[in-house]
Amino acid sequence: MKRTTILLVMAGLVALGGCMESRYRAYWKNKAAPDFQLKDLSGQSVRLSDFRGKPVLLAFWAHG
Image (cartoon, rainbow, N blue to C red):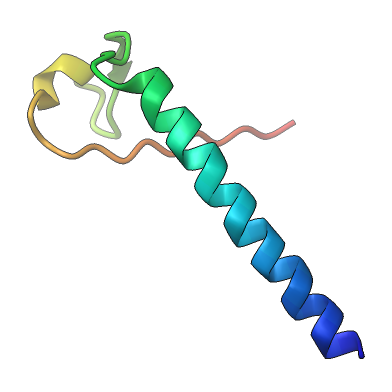
Protein backbone atom coordinates (compact mmCIF):
# COMPACT_ATOMS: atom_id res chain seq x y z
CA MET A 1 0.00 0.00 0.00
CA LYS A 2 2.80 2.40 0.74
CA ARG A 3 4.25 1.95 -2.74
CA THR A 4 0.86 2.69 -4.33
CA THR A 5 0.52 5.87 -2.28
CA ILE A 6 3.98 7.04 -3.33
CA LEU A 7 3.21 6.36 -6.99
CA LEU A 8 -0.08 8.27 -6.78
CA VAL A 9 1.62 11.25 -5.12
CA MET A 10 4.36 11.23 -7.75
CA ALA A 11 1.80 11.09 -10.57
CA GLY A 12 -0.05 14.03 -9.03
CA LEU A 13 3.14 16.06 -8.77
CA VAL A 14 4.00 15.35 -12.40
CA ALA A 15 0.52 16.46 -13.48
CA LEU A 16 0.73 19.59 -11.34
CA GLY A 17 4.20 20.35 -12.68
CA GLY A 18 2.89 20.16 -16.23
CA CYS A 19 0.13 22.64 -15.43
CA MET A 20 2.51 25.02 -13.69
CA GLU A 21 5.02 24.76 -16.52
CA SER A 22 2.48 25.89 -19.10
CA ARG A 23 1.47 28.87 -16.92
CA TYR A 24 5.13 29.73 -16.44
CA ARG A 25 5.85 29.52 -20.16
CA ALA A 26 2.85 31.69 -21.03
CA TYR A 27 3.91 34.36 -18.52
CA TRP A 28 7.57 34.54 -19.55
CA LYS A 29 7.09 34.15 -23.30
CA ASN A 30 8.93 36.94 -25.14
CA LYS A 31 10.18 38.52 -21.89
CA ALA A 32 13.88 39.10 -21.44
CA ALA A 33 15.69 38.67 -18.14
CA PRO A 34 16.95 41.97 -16.74
CA ASP A 35 20.57 42.64 -17.60
CA PHE A 36 23.00 42.57 -14.68
CA GLN A 37 26.73 42.61 -14.10
CA LEU A 38 28.85 40.41 -11.83
CA LYS A 39 32.52 39.62 -11.41
CA ASP A 40 33.75 36.20 -12.45
CA LEU A 41 36.28 34.13 -10.51
CA SER A 42 39.19 35.98 -12.14
CA GLY A 43 37.75 39.38 -11.13
CA GLN A 44 36.60 40.48 -14.60
CA SER A 45 33.15 42.01 -15.03
CA VAL A 46 30.64 39.90 -16.94
CA ARG A 47 27.19 41.02 -18.08
CA LEU A 48 24.26 38.74 -18.83
CA SER A 49 23.88 40.50 -22.18
CA ASP A 50 27.36 39.22 -23.15
CA PHE A 51 25.73 35.80 -23.57
CA ARG A 52 22.76 36.89 -25.70
CA GLY A 53 21.61 34.03 -27.93
CA LYS A 54 23.47 31.40 -25.90
CA PRO A 55 22.03 29.10 -23.21
CA VAL A 56 22.89 30.34 -19.71
CA LEU A 57 22.59 28.42 -16.44
CA LEU A 58 22.53 30.60 -13.33
CA ALA A 59 23.19 29.08 -9.92
CA PHE A 60 22.75 31.40 -6.93
CA TRP A 61 24.29 30.36 -3.64
CA ALA A 62 23.94 31.92 -0.23
CA HIS A 63 25.41 31.17 3.15
CA GLY A 64 24.76 32.61 6.52
